[in-house]
Image 1 (cartoon, rainbow over the protein chains, first blue to last red):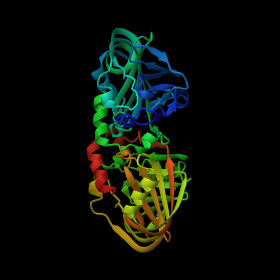
Image 2: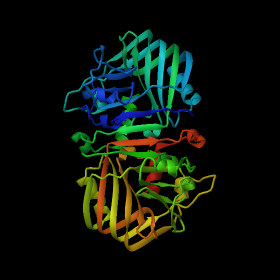
Image 3: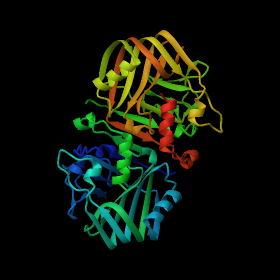
Image 4: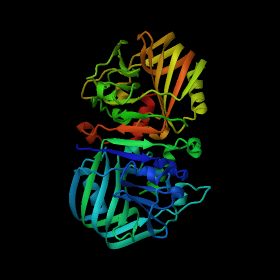
Length: 237
Length: 237
């Protein structure tokens, strides 16, 4: 299986679960590890979409803006884009897409980056609402959050497939964000239907996690794996 | 928290659980990523202890020998030794050691390498017995395995502490191997009592996993996280 590069992940999805929303890496430092990826800003402030070396924030008010180099993130995954698969997709539901991609490109136990550029019949996103300290848990913070949707949208889906063994460290399975071509619609992807699009898949043999071991709240937290698993399934799918 | 370097892990502990014991990295390639660490050989053939750039195998017959560069491993973790903590220990049980080290050096959510050189009042190890294909599961393969022990032994404990969130990818908590100074006793550490020893701890912010994505058995396996969790707790503690 062709595989190039490394997925670099700052933090764990698990640390968001009890509400460790402090920013512990700058966007500038993050982009040294990749030009494509996803994440969230300090305070769980929206959804981050990184495409072609530019990091964007989808905000809870529906606005999308580019992130400055000195803004910070508690969690993000990035890689340098170099897909080993390219394919044309047409009239495909999210469920069929996920089944086909896992099967055709043998993703089950492999980390992969997913990018889909094209025309979507339907897109539905949500955006995490900005939190203030003392932070609530991830499930509480995302229990009410704005959802956005559009029909006949041009744009880009970007994100990852991770082996389910890594649930907790990251999201096991698909974790996808969206940004429309006109920057009017974006966020964490809840649903989509592809009209006509180009799929790029990049397989990785290498997954690199960087932990915020100078963050006092991180060092002190008593994590519980089962709580994390349930919270990810509730808040990130 | 001072942190230097990266833990490089080839494979996952999880892949050993259903019996994926094929060697997928050579010892020579592994040692390019570190001079210190632990692992097992192809076929679950014994316990690997890597110290000062040399990789040793503790075999089920009790013999210890150096591993050649072309021998292969399904799973191993290595790092370049550069401890940020050094401490003198005296008259310490395993339980007290583990409690103190996690508390004093704040390991709970941090990857760390542990090395203890000195004199041990008691050492108890076990050594996984070499398997032949078709491979049994890890729990079956280790259900009967030789144990070794010694009193008043000079030697080295080497291994890792990993955050419990990474259980499955690796062993959550401590995973320690032992090699006596005279190379007469070694293996996966089941128990120890320190008489007088030097402890070195190296904290890591970075954990790098390399997956064997060209191994057909790995690609095809349907892993189950709960099975893996239980098997690690049974076979690796």
